[in-house]
Image 1 (cartoon, rainbow over the protein chains, first blue to last red):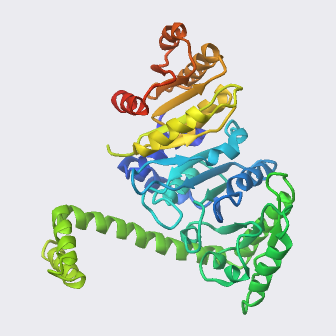
Image 2 (cartoon, rainbow over the protein chains, first blue to last red; image 1 turned 90 degrees about the horizontal axis):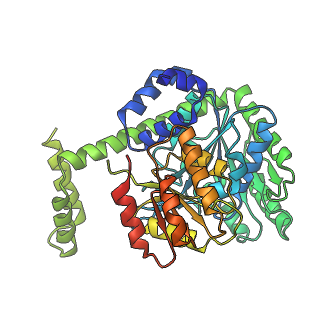
Image 3 (cartoon, rainbow over the protein chains, first blue to last red; image 1 turned 120 degrees about the vertical axis):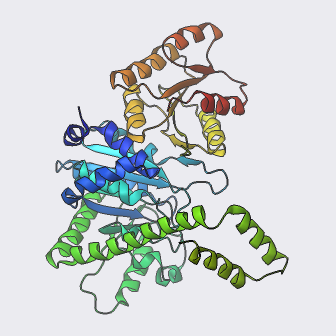
Length: 313
Length: 131
């Protein structure tokens, strides 16, 4: 079987290998995306974000099962943090999704952040394109457990689902800037716990303060582990999709996201170009030392590097 | 290539003792590997599906129930049926010395018993990768 047949057949091992290759910037995988790019865009990407332990994996598992009832093919990319010290990671999101592993219409892939800071991995965008090429209808991206400002998911997802749990903080948390602003749908998970209604009211009150909203994010109480109101949550997610499609907003958003992704890709390449060609490690070390010893200052050091790059086109 | 080594740490069978698997997972993490942990009570079929989708370099199986002679070869054979020949398969747990030759013959490339220093496992993986 050649690669085209494997793609047509949805050969999972090929799909998995392409994602691995993409994670290490392998040209062969990049060429596959290039040559199939015209056929992408069919997949709808749902970003699942929220604090650690909110139930993102369990909820993703339940939402995927709900969509399977509609005969959809589901891709899941689950991201966990990479250690900044060893470069290693424990990727444990699959634990909540084990009975999906064997479903022929489901593909689950765990990724480490590998140094990326926004709650995603640099290869996540490319991995969604691979899954899109392999014909997955819905792609869930589960971010690392986020704090307050890891908002990169909004650049890749069509709908952002914010998973919250009761009793994580006072009502001020709900009016802070950052992740609260990127949600298209709120899920209050573990809603059998005391405080779920209060959390819902706080989010709703915060939404009340937004002016001129064409679309108001719904706030849905669910219990992922008890499988309660998952269907209601899915309806709300699909309603958001319909809103985006009806108002042509989906296309606008994707243009915005592609611009951001393009910039990020250029940034990454430029950075490695700079580090490869102009700035050697020992120069960085030397400048850092000089700054510490007050033999130079950070701004002069920066200018030294920039001058070097300008002189090394 | 300097991409991280990816390891699936899996617990086939019915025992609920995952302390060893967690210690190994943590040691491999600290050695710079990406460890995908599947949790308890996995069927060989689930383990193979996860290994393929995660495209791992290593499958590390931990059993403390005594069913190793059945479950380890089952995982090896299912992987072979899927055409997978570039994953390193290792096992660990309370496994009697007498059973080890059979397991090695079945395609498990090394069996680590209680008391093995974790750095031995890390070294074995690094030296025996098939990619």
